[in-house]
Length: 183
Image (cartoon, rainbow, N blue to C red; front, side, top):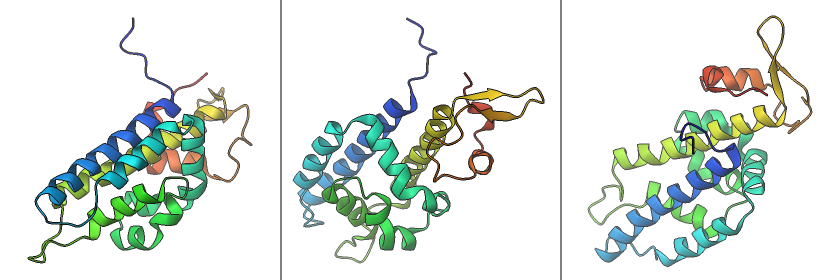
């Protein structure tokens, strides 16, 4: 078996989504058992079961549909935007999962300190950013890319996921040009 084969974006997206949900669940459980939060970790367990049942292609296409206009906010780690719009961005996810992601960011301990550290927040942001990058790869690959005679990217099916207009700009903004696969 060749270990250098990269799984398709749908599989990577699903795995990263579930890994991120488990990471957050672990943080909630620790805080809950220390009586630092009343957020019940069982809700996230239900949400993870829900995520595991979604067809991977639907999971990624729904994420793209509901979040693509806000990817720059995810890249910028804009917490205020995330607080106000997380239900829209993650519309396809279980409401329990979205609620717990939000609660991790904004719940305060009795002493007024945040429930999770800045390093933990950064880890979660990195997870969300990975979902965006994988989504861009998915769009790119679904459009059947090839390199044109001048070396630029061209697509056989540019109408795929047509509501994402400027794919080349997204590829550049997220520094993905050297990581793209071509047919």
